[in-house]
Amino acid sequence: MFIGEYQHNVDEKGRLAIPMKFRKELKKGAVITRGLDNCLFVFTSSEWKKLADKLAALPMSQSNSRAFARLMLAGAMGVELDGQGRAIVPEYLRQYAKLGKEAVVAGLYNRLEIWDKAAWEKYKAETEKNSNDIAEKMGELGV
Image (tube, rainbow, N blue to C red; front, side, top):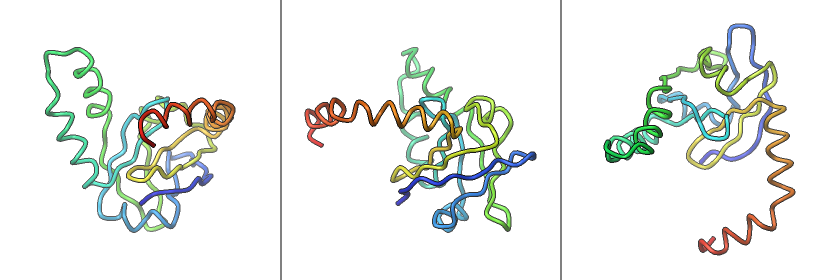
């Protein structure tokens, strides 16, 4: 289970240190792809397989299904951690997420999200401001 929020730097080669507590799970294999809200998603290989199977089963006749599958699958890349626990974030994904030098790695149960630090701070402030409304909507969903 991935939880927590960690700040790390992206070096000039596009490498990002993965928080120590997440490395063991990701050493077995990981996939990084475009996420939602202009962040990146990182999945373990097993979680990625579950998601990819669901995406492959979506009806090709529906444009939203095709678009979402393209977003997630075409942008995906397998990643390996180096000896220092760093992963190379491909340039096209750094551009998509507008990643600068400072990044936030957030654990969200079955995935990690990688955010540009300034974008994360802005998103988090807005979410915290609207937390009561969000909580009410989640209550309607049984959460």
